[in-house]
Image (cartoon, rainbow, N blue to C red; front, side):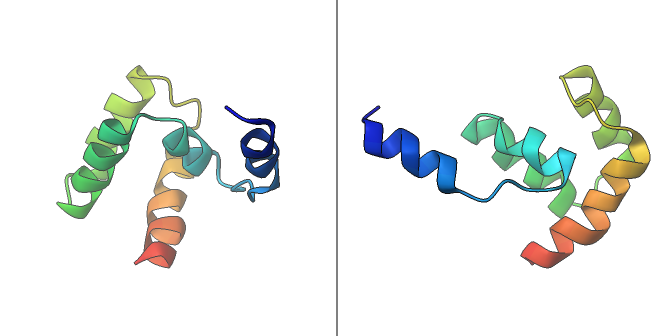
Length: 75
């Protein structure tokens, strides 16, 4: 990666939501599947359990807040 690319990355806003940060670090395929599960209205508790087993380091109330606030804002 070129210096200008790395510096440009530093200027990107950092999401305040820990779930957003975790999601942003996923592969493109994993992000797409995560979003699809939430779009398909799979129960949040089921999605949370799978995400927790795969590195999500937030509690379930933070996850639910992400669904309520961050997902709605992007819609």
